[in-house]
Amino acid sequence: MPLLSFWKSNRDEVLRLTIEQVVSSAGDGNLHDHSGCSGELRKFLRSVPSERLFAYARHCLETSFNKSGLVLQDVVNELGRRLDFDVEDGLYQGKRNTVGFDGIWHSAEQPDLIIEVKTTDYVTVSLDRLRGYKDKLLTQARVHKDASILIIVGREDTGALEAQVRGSRYAWEMRLISIEGLIKLVQIKEKSDDPATLNQIRQLLRPFEYTKIDGIIDVILTTAVDVEASQSSEQGAPESDLSERDGYKQVRTAPELLDEKRHQAVSSFAFLKHKELLKRSRTLFWSPDKDVRVAASYQNATSEGTSPIGMRITLNGTSSWRTQRRVTSFSLVWIEKTLLPSRIPGLGRTRRI
Image 1 (cartoon, rainbow, N blue to C red):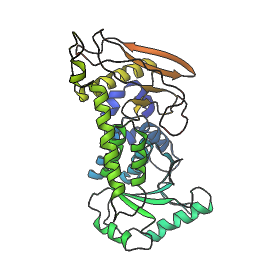
Image 2: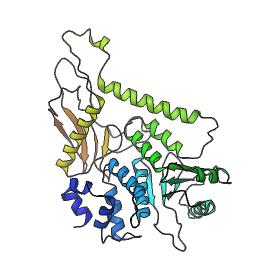
Image 3: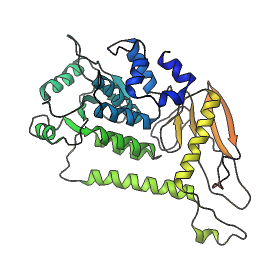
Image 4: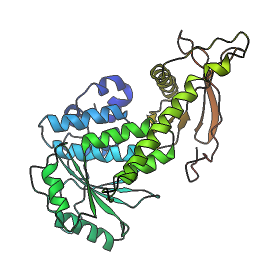
């Protein structure tokens, strides 16, 4: 059965497959440029939860199998999409009169990133060749002159490659990150609702002067404040404020449980609509084609009773509501229906919902 048909009919079974089995089920199972296998695989990767992408990337690094490096390239580019870059997939194998980049990550707010994926740093990388990619892309007007090169390496121990970049004339044009480091950035982004966190993450992927570490401290502080604010808003007001309310008994629910119930609610809604919904931030979920976007958020419980989970979605231009009054037998903090406007405050630009 073709991969995408199998995915639609038996999602849980497909998620239990290894990435090798996934590739063999895509198209004719022969992964190469412009093949049906490549098209199906890339479309599938856009639909799977980020946790599976992490597992696929690690499997490619830990297990040797045919064309594992090509599969890793597609997985890494999908991780770029999870960081909200507009990703242009590169070729698996360079050809004459083509530019052999592995990917280009575009962003309206940040300069482009030209991606080079390496499973290991044991082999010396030709930095001149990578810089040549940028020159050719500039000639073709496919990247901006401020574009930089991001080398993504499978191993966390990248000392040899770091020394090679530092000692080259391209030190201010290239940056290096391990795949585990990239995975951690995706995890941070998906736990956040603050656009400033995503902006700081993207800045980390660009070359910058780090003798002075203020920029790194800003990232840590922004993320910590964002997470703390998120937890405070969902756990309720301080007890000192609530003690003045007659007859009120506050029940605090663990953030992990709230997040689990949020995922259950969104998954149920996705099942009803026959849509895949991927986590974009702590409370926002999108379909891979971005046609459906769901926000699920909790608010404080009060003495009047309980509210249902509320989600407002737009499907094919038509707005509708779905609520669930009893998620589990647990007592949850207040859950409020909140309209998602077409302009989301704080995102820095208009997003159509």
